[in-house]
Length: 414
Image (cartoon, rainbow, N blue to C red; front, side, top):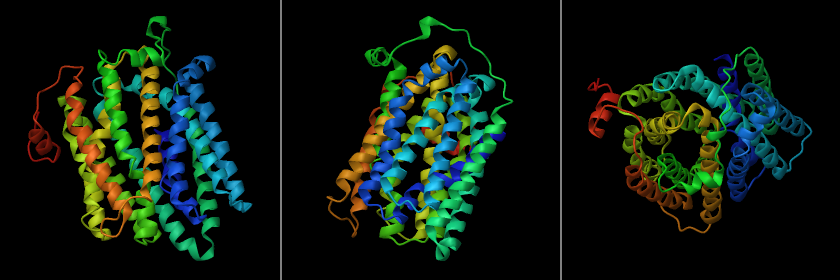
């Protein structure tokens, strides 16, 4: 848990501030799109080799530590460049790609290690609780980062980013120290559990898990048509300062982590698929809310709604993998899932950045037109694809209305 907490602070100091950083350097909308697309693309490409890396190193724990060290090196290099006043935006995008790639290579091994300690069937509530704790630490880090940038702006914004990323580096290093004493559970090697990416796609018609991956990838593609550009819209179009930007951004993140444990508890009873069928269409409503008003207070409420539905989707889409595959196949399935989703995220961000400047304006903003397109496509995916996927364990049959009332604490489904 200590590793997760210190790593979360690093995330809070970096995740929501990479785009503001390159905007401070004078980045274009297209470069923002590349910053969102390229890390996802290359992270996805290396995912299919992450299991081979773990096999080569001979330990999932050592794989996690090795890539965490690489993350530290890339983050440290970016800090040195900032203080040396290197202003090449493409170099920073390249470092962001390498940082993301290292994180992608450690993710399947780390996730598989975590679920080994928890056990399948009860992971919903535990991982929801863990994500809530770690998430609130990340939120606190993000709020501190926003305040720091706001009050440091007169003294030099780029230097402030340098100190912010330096602090992120220190927290990454401390998180590494917490990884060292963790004992890894070894799994027996099973040659029958191996399957290639082509074999995975070849079973698309009969594989329930493959259908789920297609659904998740399409959802990520439609969401990321607009998602990378909310920061640009707030900072450039609407002229928000860093405090307002941070509060609006954190409203969604905070709600996600508040609701994750509650969604997890219900998913353990009703099944992950029931939650996914309920929240997926609502994800399509999220970008449409941005068309109605642009006042910060309204956008905070819109972000709370976003966090509510994304909490259920994010938790249950991840936990569905743990239910659907055996422990021997788990690392590989997580890698293939991340590969497909990463490609979808990249394509979504790339297509959004490509068309954004060519779209007609709605209420004076081209971004709102992109929100409309993204929202409609999300609705189509969220309504039509989940019925093709089957629940993989015996669960209580609950209707969407009952689920919603129970999640809100108005009626118990137990």
